[in-house]
Image (tube, rainbow over all chains, first blue to last red; front, side, top):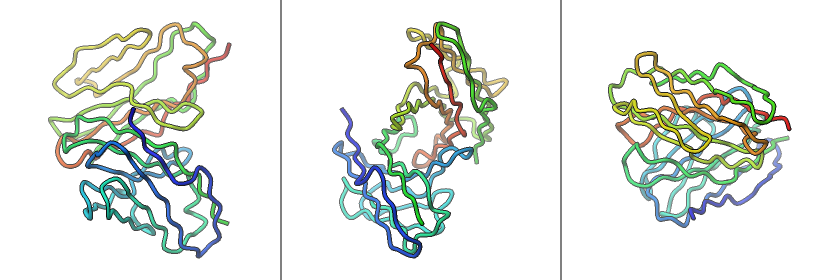
Length: 114
Length: 115
């Protein structure tokens, strides 16, 4: 079974704090993705990575950065959290470069910024 | 860029009824892929099916069936004899065929199956 784990299920932070969301996979897949999910907006891609140290901006990268130092781990960083970053954050992985491949998702981290 | 419209935001059906979830997409690509994902109340999205733009053959898998019509840019999903366990949010997601799997998710259709 594919395993995608996210460091926290629920997280509460204060405005201005630096926040790290971690995603770890055990499948040796090349691609890793960070999405945020908001009611009425569906899933929106923040960043993705197709290899170690490689990253690409998604549709809404503002206010976020990412790090991928090892193949199995992809971190999402909120440099200075704001209340409009309160959301559900989902990590996903997929193999190879073929767009035909499905994505496998983690359980999500519900972040609340006060 | 691709767009996807799931016009039904919420649907309620009584158990054993059939239900169809609609998906209309826009793309300028000639080659692309289409996915459906399911998100149960537990929160974890699960892949259900994919189609490539060359394969308009519709499929039935148990109680699930999919109707892909390229001419109308639709990729609808039907559950026959719905069950309470089908209660979830369902996402339609077209994907570009080039590049690194840039998938565009719809806003989702929340299905509630009432016992």
